[in-house]
Image 1 (cartoon, rainbow, N blue to C red):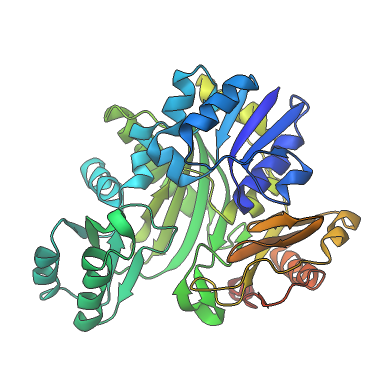
Image 2 (image 1 turned 60 degrees about the vertical axis):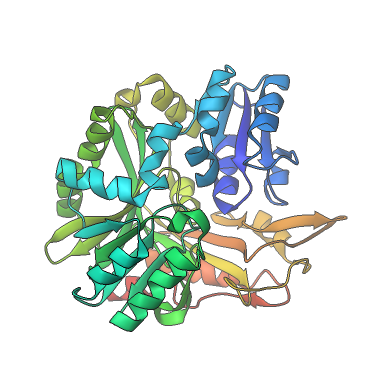
Length: 423
């Protein structure tokens, strides 16, 4: 089987790692890939949004399965284009990827089908949003409607901050056209948990839980990022919470999308808030989380290709999804200055150390080759992941492994998974 993976970050490296383990796979291509993925796949210089080139490449190479890892091409309709060209593809079609592509759509869907979420209002005009905020209770959350690299969410503690937030999203268009519509949402408190799931249009099978750390600095200070690290499983995601979510959130979401004529096949990522009133949905994503995939996929016992095939064929109910009874922690090594400005092209050393140790992984997020040397090529550079019998052991292993790798301006949070100590 020849597989094409679309994307070039840490998530796609984790997917490539799992795909490469399948006995069914003889060749992997990745577009555009990165220096780490290049060890597992042939990387081709085609961008994730170059639909015509991707389709032509898939046809030319007679690709048996395409896996779309990233949000932009999913929301843009790459799955539809590949399928129209006869390429078997894993990921939601454009009309289903709207679950992530529009926060206003997903909030309205949850309201219509009684799926627990925060109270909210949608606004297309900044004037109407400002008028609403004059009478709102603070703190409050402002969200750009569309995709914003995980950064289009502002938590405002005062009316002044909220007015500035409206300006940022709707007037200055900091997140581009994603800010044409804005969601204003009640501020929820509680533990955040991420649950990834496989979906075949009607059946949903959830993976092991995880928890991301979005803020750039220790103690959840600093700006929102694409994620500075994660751990799995979450000790706060109990059997009781899982039972509630299976009944009131997960299956209801799949059924709601089907009822709307938007059958969802692919990955649904549920961002949950465990509030005093029970679990509520913070957000949906229509693909593997990044860096959640880096701690969830290494713990999966199943052949990823077999599970993906079952999703495409509507036979997920026949799959017994299993995960190892252990834990994993991922610490992101970033370039200092991320998510604002940072240097690229800095040489990376120590990567060969990971080949010597079982249960340790170095997933490349932003790297490239400069001659034979691997150099930094993004804000988030590497996802250093380690497994352990317990979360504490996995955390200690991951931080130990961060010391193996060096590059100038290396930056990381030192409290990834600290919540474990409080569990």
